Image (cartoon, rainbow, N blue to C red; front, side, top):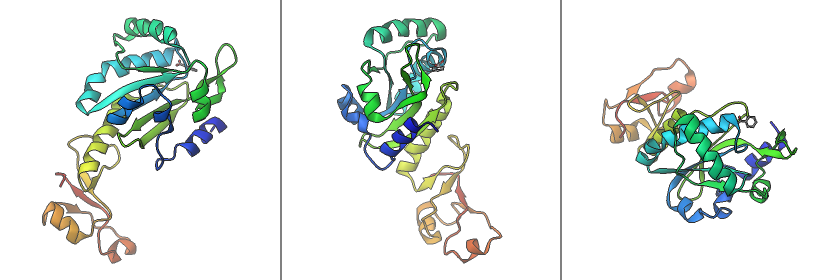
Length: 229
Ligand code: BEZ
């Protein structure tokens, strides 16, 4: 992993406040609403063009989930304004959400999100291709960083939002590849007695496991429910 990414991860531990909320001019909006924020390596680049178009085409799905979108790259507002016209022609997606500008790269340097292994035509490092889910309490719920050559998957980001919203309200976690309507996992820290209280007796399914550790626990650790309590 490039050292710039390591620096960013160190700075943006999931437990600390998202530092860029204080740097960007739209911070008051960011604080009020859950946000998905995309860092883009640069304007007028092909993968980013497809991603921003896809984000725009999915915007209604994000809105339904009480979530706003925004992007960020080290370009200026003129560049952004021209680029979004290209994005619409290429993808059919009209970018209406804010794209933050950082032509001086001050914010990118402060955040440690410049990738020294990827440079623009002038030899300046590009921003990492990261995505963040920012919560209204200014903490980061999720961050993923992709290589510059790999575009993000918006269905996955929406799937994570669905999981976050469900697990914030209910005593459940979502298993691998979970999607809305699938079985959920009864929260591991709940004892069976507590799970009975929340889900009702017989309201969840215990998978009997062969391990001794699983048998001696006062709670079974593999428990599925199909209705979230
Ligand atoms: C792209 O978005 O296509 C891209 C950006 C930076 C490096 C390589 C590809």
